[in-house]
Length: 330
Image (cartoon, rainbow, N blue to C red; front, top):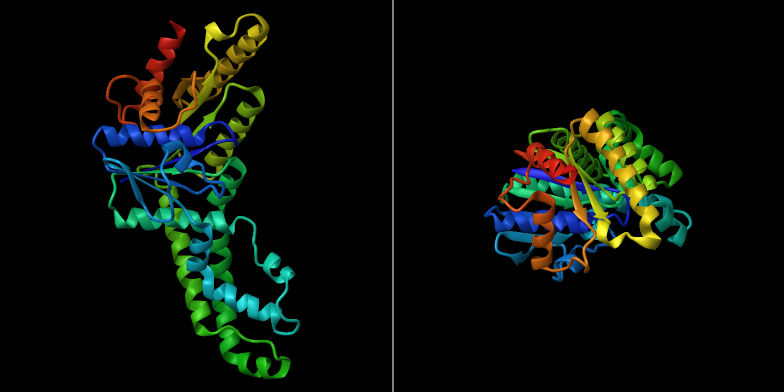
């Protein structure tokens, strides 16, 4: 099974590119699941299908889902959250501030990512494509498993022993409730899942990340930072997709200067990713209409990956990227 994550700055077309890849792979006979971890879901709009927290068949060979972060959060740390709520409200009662204190930044996205591991272990698909949240949130997701896992592994054994030893006396004296065994069990379970997720995410034979960008200077700068950050955490980036390239025939007159800026941006991308890092660059021109629905997504996939059958999961991707470059040079 292959897992491919599509990430990038908000508004660059991650969902469209990810959905195009999923449709193309399904059309070529692979069994594919595409899921969105972005809380502002637009995957269903792109596929023109109503999606929920369970897989829905979109076309033959392709299922899709939009993660319900509330359900995944409850599943991942419901008992621990209930205990923290009890702890915070034991004296003053429930309040809006309590709910705000328990809304830890990034937790919703992290627990969505845990679903990736569950799908991988179930092994019911050939390819899992993940339409990620915008860059900043995605980077937080990718570093959370290691950071949170290490914290829990160091702190948990000490806390559990202390609670068993002096917990009843402290609870009686201070009237502060102590965590039950089931709370610690849930934290141990969560720690184990985080550790498995971390090991899966850095397995380069299974997981790769693709950065979607547009040929604009500000967006390209973020794509470069994104790439360096991913390398730092040992994640594999196997392609950069440049979306919304303006066609030459549409850039005459008033938009002439935009064409010059676009050419400079594309040169910058080629030098940074393809020549220095040997990461293929794939391209998609701005289309005359919004890319929604299976037929238009399949057309977009052909324009990105070529007319002939292509293994979008990674094999031969470098050659496809180089062929695209040669085509554009000619």
